[in-house]
Length: 94
Image (cartoon, rainbow, N blue to C red; front, side):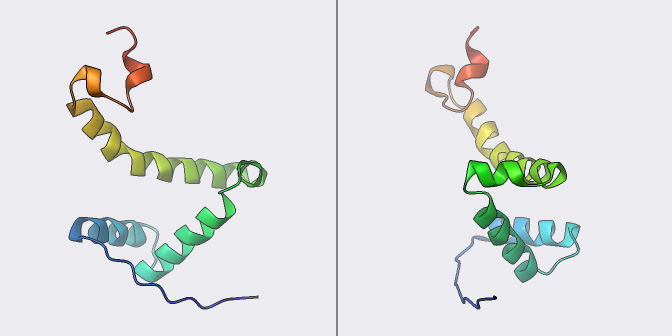
């Protein structure tokens, strides 16, 4: 069964460029890439479902999540040590 859903998403230029670049890397249109992302998210909201995916798919999803988190991590590193959130466990010595 398929479903057609029309959604409008407001993206700033940087977000749109990032999505378009990732779509091109995978040989997809922007719409195809977003559709694939939504399908992956739908499958992986439940940890038990995630565990049932093939290892290659799990690794690919984890890599995408790491790429998405990298700017947040970098921004966190720019903050004073006492105000950091994402790097708290990596800075226990300091």
